[in-house]
Image (cartoon, rainbow, N blue to C red; front, side, top):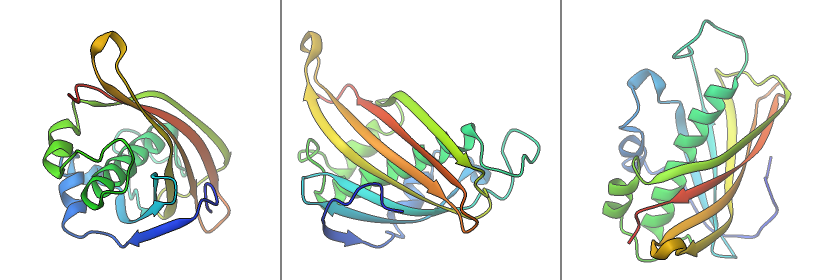
Length: 177
């Protein structure tokens, strides 16, 4: 289920202290991310492999499959964890000067999804599924003199029955002076 075949340099098991802190902004019944293994990649980027469970949708009757809203929520949780762990371990190009305190300060107000796309190929069981996400590029810019970081990412979800959903997202990290 690898998004790409980029060589991994270092891998970190789920950080049991970091994960609950990353998920703290979510309502308890909307904390879907269970485990997250982060890898530093040879090109200064990083990847996460995760497991999820959505016992009950937080907004709709049971559809029997992972839907677009839940894909986005799971992506957010996976992405926040990947950024936090990458900052903590010094894995991600463009964030070398960040500390975890910087991440906590920017997590909700300054990390934006600028573009999000999903392709559902087969229904995914929301009660037990895997996810993977990776940074494909990170670029520091200063449009109008205001620094920001733009990042492209790819993600994939799957389950034991062959369910599959793939997508891409572009992130904007703003107010990062």
